[in-house]
Image (cartoon, rainbow, N blue to C red; front, side, top):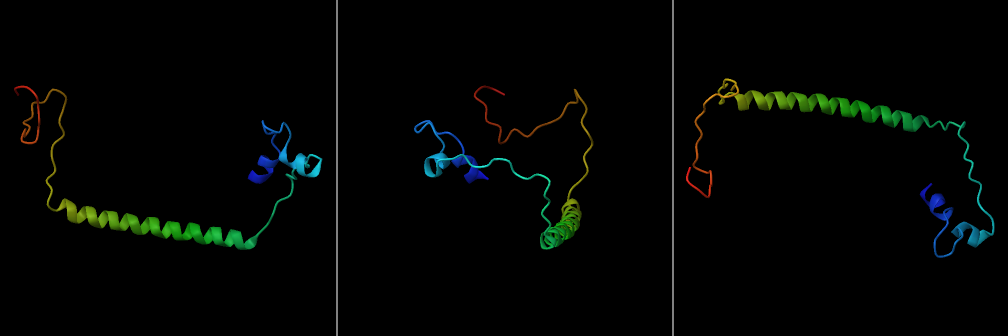
Length: 100
């Protein structure tokens, strides 16, 4: 389709299409839209790929849950901060130009 589109478009240098320059006529541009191409192998392959993706998605979810379980063992749950709450910050790595 890309080649057809390129060869059937008018170029600024020639003022004609490359197809017309080679063959002296414009190609037929009405493509059949009612025809449905059936390929059982492609449908089977598509079904196979979706089943593989589903299995991988489930496996990744299991791994994510396992990793979060071990990660969260060493972590404490913190309370949610509200607007205008006073908190203490560690300024060790905070670089400023003026006095803090």
